[in-house]
Amino acid sequence: MGVVIEVNELTKRYGGKTAVDHLSFTVRPGQVTGFLGPNGAGKSTTLRMILGLDAPTTGSATVSGVPFHHHSRGLRHVGALLDAGQVHGGRSAAAHLSALARSNGIPRRRVDEVLQEVGLTEAATRRIGGFSLGMKQRLGIATALLGDPPVLMFDEPVNGMDPEGVLWVRRLFRRLAAEGRTVFLSSHLMSEMENTTDQLVVIGRGRLIAAEPLRDFAARGTRSSVVVATPQAAELAAVLTAAGASVEPEGSAGAEKLAVTGLSADRIGALAFESRIRVDELTTRTASLETAFMELTADSVEYQAGQSR
Ligand SMILES: Nc1ncnc2c1ncn2[C@@H]1O[C@H](COP(=O)(O)OP(=O)(O)OP(=O)(O)O)[C@@H](O)[C@H]1O
Image (cartoon, rainbow, N blue to C red; front, side, top):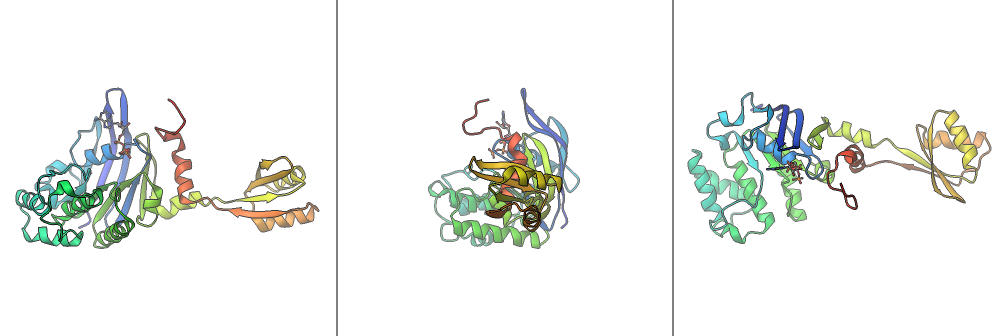
């Protein structure tokens, strides 16, 4: 297998609006890569360009070195779930998959295999129109798997799924990657990525913010601070600053606290003791992965509550 998705200086403009802005990254096989960004960051537009459904304004996207539309029988090369709602509601799940199998030269037995894989065997002959969103997502995943492709792309795959479905889908992605496939999935929620992905591509307002292993991204968020409660805030702040820490006041007058970065809780305690400063509380505060994501994308969130643009 070993198929790579490469996005190179990819740009998409809609009139005066730049949805994707000189974006470059690589998605490698054998691991799950998460594509993360706030709403409107340009994830769906990027996935559509990779799949040849939208033409880039400039730049390029290739799958194993060539644009996607150069691959004949696309479903055998790249399986994708973009919008689970966009299926013909009048057909049954089995009829929908059979039609796709026929037009892509895929053996009929794959239809039963993928229905089984996604847990829709019982519902195979029911009209898709009556499916819940979670069932439609499962059908979309079945469609992506139909051609047994080396590359899989999923846009917000767990939307509408119940907790059992979310766990199932996580295990499925892990297994597909362990089989050597290239697995690329988008989400606007860090929490969805945390337990599923090895690599992250993070974008905001169409631009690349980070492309790195999840653990490196997490390390950005573990920049911890220590909160110190003391009746001698000004004196302690001076001591800690002299020792190289950066100190921010927190709390209200009379119950003052200092948020200290750059020194461990042990060291702060020792320095306070040496200077005969009373400390009432010392708490280490570790930022979560979610916080790292929010901090990094704060400037690029397009729609924020309580904010008019
Ligand atoms: N066909 C279009 N015409 C005009 N603007 C568009 C079109 N498609 C997308 N956009 C704009 O491009 C930007 C990126 O949209 P896109 O759907 O790619 O973001 P996204 O990251 O997938 O967001 P979400 O998480 O909300 O799905 C948005 O501002 C959107 O309004």
